[in-house]
Image 1 (spheres, rainbow, N blue to C red):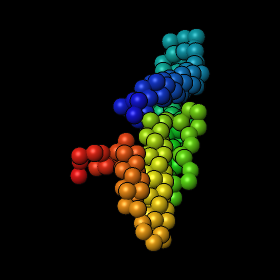
Image 2: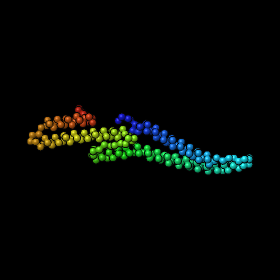
Image 3: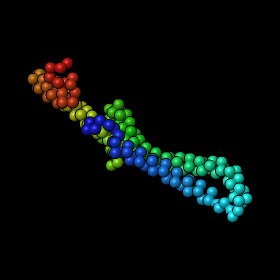
Image 4: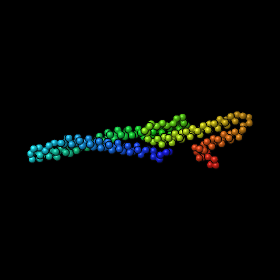
Length: 186
């Protein structure tokens, strides 16, 4: 794999930035609403100022609760929207990765896993595609060896050297992909 991290650091930074913007935006909106709700004059005289302040004191907890609730709802909605958008960048490749692994378990190596341009987990998907390609080559070599053995066994005098030669060729090609097939290793 080219990159040790399945999710690119730039993607993580962008996500954190978007989430921070959502928090700041919701704080600004609720602060402005709170400010305009409480923006009242104190009155012309001392007595009117005391009445206004006592009314303000009585309504302040209610306004704070409403402000907190509005901020909570805004943060929740923006968080859900951001997470839905971001989860598709991660869940899409994971879903396709899972389908590919299931098809490999069923001996189906006909297709590669595709990713969209901005999907995350691309290194894992590319590694899986490399694995699928190596399996195709190994199975192709085994199928060719089997065909050669079948053809030689149909003859009256099968030539073991031809079978050995094909077996050596398959073993060499498989050695590129799996250490158990390398020369001298068993």
